Picture 1: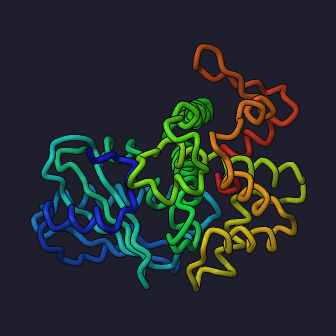
Picture 2: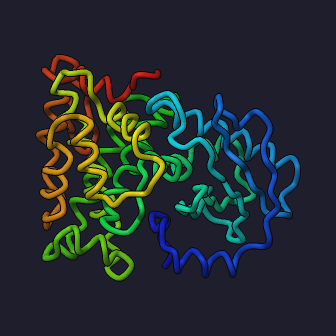
Picture 3: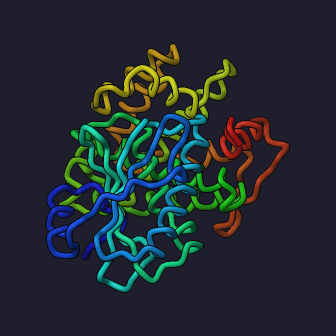
Length: 317
């Protein structure tokens, strides 16, 4: 069964492309998909109508604007977004992937019946675009990259006004719960599980362990009260290192160097060796996030509630 979270499978993606899709034509968008000196080249499947192309351009424009709410600009100056139509009438965006070529490519398979509002509300494009926030070579520790995309897909949607702070934390909490309940392979370390996800299908534990990693790193940076946040750390990484692709371990070392601490490498070691999703309720409580019968409640009198609000708002709100 094809699972929507299975986003970066090279073998699977090639097979699906051969089965599902026709040839592409390149259609570089107008100024709608340009950010300062940055641009997104949009390529459409050849049988997409002009009206649908305009809807898809508006959707890409909205989503790329959301991505700039991490640190004020796109993480790459030029990337390609390929739009293809699904032949299956299920889901809004049933599949997507990122290819790390010389020019990065984001491929999105779209239900042709989807409206603009449905497209904007679907999480897939935010997830795929968020992969671009690190110069990851996809060679190891997939939980690391998928976790970043799972974390930021919710944050940038909230910052773009798609839903409230409470709903953002509800979605993150529910994701952590899904990861916690994925216990079929709790005799295996996350690093092994992640490297063999095509066989074990432990998407929830892999993806949401990764998202928790980035939340914990974000909280730890903000608690230092030196002006750093995950947003800023990723911006520094963008400025120094986006001319090459790095392994997950190399990225953590570079982030520690840029922020002058060992937060990223120490958490990376801890998570790689974990057999279950690490604990998260203490982190949420510290931020003023309580849950009752599965529903989150925000407490603004909590000592670190300002960190919770800062994660929601971002610098470029």
